[in-house]
Amino acid sequence: MSNPRYARPQEATRDQVPPQARQESPAAPSQPTAAARTQPTGWVGWVMLAGVGMMIVGCFQAFMGLVGIFNTDFYVVTAEGLAVPVNYTFWGWLHLVMGVVVLLAGAAVLAGKTWGRVVGICLAALQALVNFAWLPAYPVWSAIVIAIDVLIIYALAVHGGEMKAFARSDAR
Image (cartoon, rainbow, N blue to C red; front, side, top):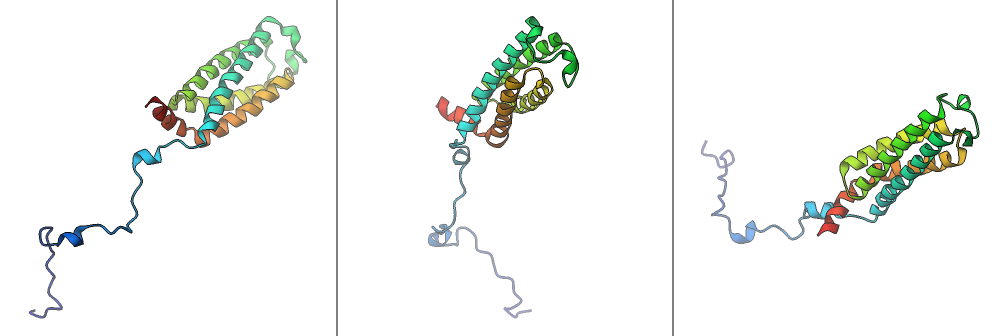
């Protein structure tokens, strides 16, 4: 086995390699750093829209709840005509509590909190369903709340993670 074709070449150690060969070629692509990947983009505006929208819709929900609690004669149809037939006082308390929670989650989204984003998506979906059931009693407000809820879900689901980077870069 003295044939050089079958001999294993010796691996060069770092000390034996000339410094010119150790340098990386300038054409090698560099990996983006973690800081470069977390820079906020222009889509942060969608997330801010979602946060502010959640706060506005939370106020709408709370007002709808207060009307349901204190003035049950205000509505277009009776409680039996609703998709889910319950009394207006129950619906009022449900809307009031949901409104306050959505308002607080909207503030958390604007602060860049991940829990606010998750709660915001879940509550916006739940709120849209509740307002769909509430549609016969309060058609205009319910339609507005459902439309805003769809925008909130889109903004938080697609671009919600960018708000954390924006909140960090704003704090510097």
